[in-house]
Image 1 (cartoon, rainbow, N blue to C red):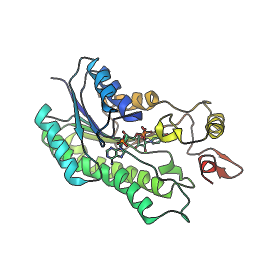
Image 2: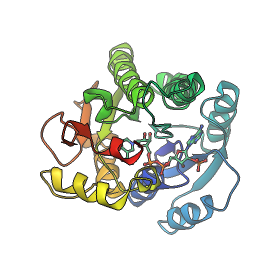
Image 3: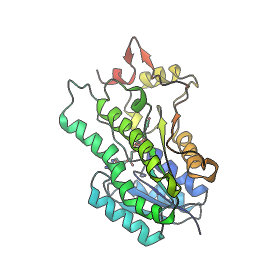
Length: 260
Ligand code: NAP
């Protein structure tokens, strides 16, 4: 029987690529999306082209009742969830001086509370199966911090603490819990940066380029596989560099220059 992967926020970007990459490995795929729009159709077509099952489940990860419902939908359709990828995430960048309480709360609600909500609903099935993989999208800024992203960095640092703690809670049930911390990855999330800033960022990265969704999805494929069966509670950076340093110019974070 094929293994089942549930990926949140998979209508585009990294989530979409994770769905395609895991489909290539033979997983049956459930993708969560938030808004009713045309985005999900290309994901469906690409996943089905890999000859695996596809299910799209609607729901906002920040609303517990909606996550309860969509996880139930996946179980009713597939009977199991072997791999959960907590990918849904948003930014609301600005300096703390200008940040509204709502900007802080919304980012924490989607990124961190959303990760709790979905995991909380999935974990009973993994506990019963005495097996599972939970992989959450953190970020290098959750480790290093980043001017203009107090809300986002706090949410991603929270995901790292959540990952390390849960890994200890569920290791005895053979459930492995890890996080991936991408650097600058080309998606709609980073498209908002000005071109010259993107060029500066690429120059400052030892590997001399921004990452791709495939770069991230390939590490997630490894963490979902049997090849990573002795790895839990870890955060793996996918950032083209070898230190917790975010590129900076004249002591200003480059991404920050985008909005000051
Ligand atoms: P993206 O292109 O903006 O896509 C984000 C996805 O999350 C979209 O499908 C979006 O759906 C979904 N989403 C947002 N809020 C949601 C909610 N409340 N409920 C359900 N789905 C929701 O972002 P990305 O670059 O692929 O990022 C994916 C993950 O990687 C995020 O957690 C992000 O923080 C993390 N990450 C990205 C980078 C980067 O450089 N791109 C770096 C580090 C970490 P809608 O279409 O409905 O908005």
